[in-house]
Length: 146
Image 1 (spheres, rainbow, N blue to C red):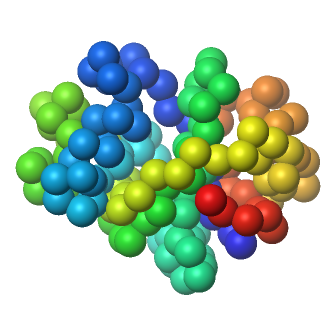
Image 2 (cartoon, one colour):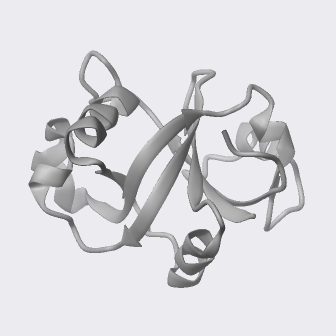
């Protein structure tokens, strides 16, 4: 499966953290939009992600050990309704250039990054992420998604 691995940080997240804030909205509405700062992923990669049997992206906690599969139902560049975004980043929604409609989070296996191959280099994500400041990677993943 070709997908995207995104780094995330807790710089401006509420006390419970980024994932918990999104999960609270998913529990309430059935989904939450997850925003990606900076350049959006390409339309062709978005189509590939969404064409998978289980469309997912991998979220990697910068500076932490947490990894999550985010099950996605849509990807868009337009800012969604603010009520569909966790409240802690509604005031800066215009800074996000790509949005993922997440319907579920699942904690990824501990070794998930060693099972991901970066499409551009052929290196394992474990190695590539250590030596790159890139906020996201296009990856190939052949394992099971939880």
